[in-house]
Length: 366
Image (cartoon, rainbow, N blue to C red):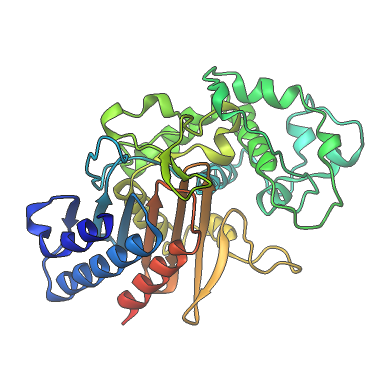
């Protein structure tokens, strides 16, 4: 039944049955791209049994296409729009890295500052913590390991949640071999605390005022409780019997905001992609270029915040996101001035993200 519904969307698109489209510009190429993207996405949704998906496509200084496919959750059947808000998981790290770069641009921080020089109250049973720099946290080479229990059900919304969480940890107990790549959500939570220390405000407020608001991301927030109910989407998983169900717990806890809890829509992230591409194209602004360049010889696929890719022989930057009930992927090709974001409210069948995004990139470059 689901397969019939999704296929029929393509032929009833003007009725907006389960797909809500915003097409920016009316050129023949844009209309052709829209139809090709719809066909591709609907095919993949059928193939992987995805309840809901949203995409945004940008080129130069314009949103080319934003659209929502499917439903907010399988019970209400409320249709998705370009403004539907998803938990983006590790896409959050790009905004934390950008906040750090914003402080560096102002002269308040330096990439090679020691984190204990900024926050000496961070605890460690070893001396290793003293040698960790901002740069190493950004590219996951600090030796700081990861955490495995995010306590999403705890729903801590206190302004001091991040500080209290980090200060009760012995960070030394998480240390691994330094100058080695270990993907670390904990490291990005520490970066968020650094933002708080240097800016004398909460991490969420700093990002809201310095990035989200200035970019026009009016429906997005690191604080889930600020997202209007009508825009929220539900996380979906599959049971051992391969049946899709709605998860009871939304992945939110303010203790892990900097690493994981940006809630955003495809339209808002499209606005951010345009803004960031414009920043990279400004010859007078070189600070943010550090984010896009390989920063660790042993792992050339990591910049300072961005993951680095090669897509059809083009240098691409972006980040994957994955959490309980959600998957996401954002990719920009600076030399082509294009970007694509994909957001989904399911946590199974990982490959659909790159299969959709890479093919959209191919359509745009062709």
